[in-house]
Image 1 (cartoon, rainbow, N blue to C red):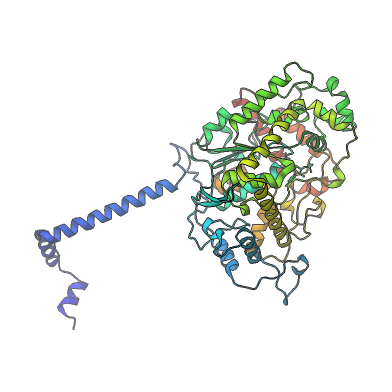
Image 2: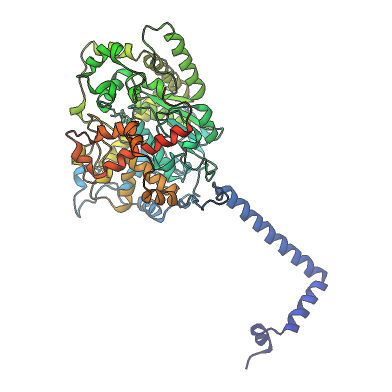
Amino acid sequence: MLSPHRRWTRDPPLSSVTSCVRRGLCSKRHSLWMLLVLLLVCVAFQTFVTRSARTDKLTGPGPGLPDLRFTVNKQPSPSLQKVWEHWQNTRPLQTDRPDLHHQKGGHRKPSDHILLTHVDKILNPTAGSQLEEQLDPGPLGLRSTRNHLTAGPVERLVHSPTTSGTKISCHPKSHIVFLKTHKTASSTILNVLYRYGESRNLTFALPVNKHSQLFYPFFFASHFVEGVSSRRVTEFNIMCNHMRFRKSEVVKVMPDDTFYFSILRHPVSMMESIFIYYKSIPAFHKTRSLDDFLDNSRRTYNSSVTNNHYAHNILAFDFGFDNNVAADADDLEERASRAVAAIERDFHLVLISEYFDESMVLLRHALCWSLEDMVSFKLNSRSERTRHQLSADTPEKIRRWNALDWRIYLHFNATFWHKVDSLVGREQMKREVSQLRELQLKLANTCLKDGGAVDPSQIKDAGLKPFQYGAAVIQGYNLNPDLDPQTRTQCQRLITPELQYTERLYTQQFPELAAKLKHAPRKVPPQRQRSDRTAVMGRVWSSGGHHRPVIRHRVSNLINLKASTSGLLAHTAAHNKTGVP
Ligand SMILES: Nc1ncnc2c1ncn2[C@@H]1O[C@H](COP(=O)(O)OS(=O)(=O)O)[C@@H](OP(=O)(O)O)[C@H]1O
């Protein structure tokens, strides 16, 4: 038989409850306790609501709009946690010779934990890893589970060495605009930014409708960014796709404390690269050689023809200036000074492609990122067989033809080293550059099958083939087949070409839109397609070439993505009053 107490617990008679409540309410002490409990519940609820509002960077859908919320996983994925734990294993450090990657049994293949141990060692020779304090995700963009990081922009303190050798603390920047200039190693930097942002769930200001460029070569307008017009995204972290810069529009999208940077390349090597890559643009396609173009350009170059801007002062063009200026123009110096002053005003840092590793170190100091964040493999590089030796007098001809770019480059080449001196110091720079190279070598040994770049015909995974264009053969990478799944994923990010990575991020940020776009037919009238720049690029693409079979697998997609699309033009023409100069 049940005791009276247990019977009450199972089936409390109504009278007992009401008398209990009455007793409780009548007693002053009980009332106070109840009030206190209520207060605590309220406080807990309010805290919960405030936190959710702060972490949710997206607003709800506008009236009548479908809910297209950004659904990126806000927690470090379990697989990444596993990899990190894997890294923590105290397995003995083994050699990382690439020839051991394929050995079964005996020697274990050099694994990701070796990388971490190595990184720890070179970045922090003393006990108690600085990496742990920095809460960095590791050289492959991994997140540490040791530090119980929350997702989203990471507010951590980084201890960064200064020119005087002392360490200062700083907060890593996560509001960034990178003006992606052409043929300047900008795709390699894009990959660094993509990995950094993806591993921290940062929000990218990606081109609308899954395009890979921000409607280049039109002047940038804020509505080119997915999520701006719909107001679904309220805070962007990183904007880094090709655009023609227009600050007044960029500031409408990016937060006030955004860090602006870009990269320049020596106009001579840049022109050689551009001539091969954009061989099919009207300015180049009938010319026999670069010298042929340069010797006749004063007479034959037509700046008003679509796509010809690639052939003349392209750096100035990308920064938003008028690129049509002759070397003997009266106002050349004045225009160059104005361009330099505007770039100085609008950009916190201008990097130099010729000093790529130094640039990465300088950037890391400016952004307060770790050296690990800056690792990369060279992307978008041409095969040696599509490089052309310049004759002795060609460099001077290029400098004259691109006189505006040349002046801009000279200025920022000088200020680059002033920045190195003031921000890092030459000795520290040397140390960090060699650390960075050491790290990259380790990564190459771990991640890459052939230890380096290969021609597109050698790339096994069709999804990792870079976009091929013009007369250039753009190289890519094969992954080491022996990688464990998690390491493979991280290595893959390092070698994912721009188009594929952009598409993936778009799909992560806007899954519903991406799904819709996959099935939506292009809404551009055929006659428009034939006359716009997309058609020009498309024709070039399909006109054949020795490397074409290599990239057939995604031809239609890639034309749409890289080489400005018809949709892009239709959209841009409607919105952009500036248009092509
Ligand atoms: N790390 C590093 N250091 C030095 N140079 C590098 C690096 N990464 C890429 N590159 C070279 O940059 C050229 C490709 O530039 P982009 O990626 O900006 O091209 S693109 O405009 O996005 O198509 C391309 O130059 P060319 O090979 O002369 O064409 C690449 O080889």
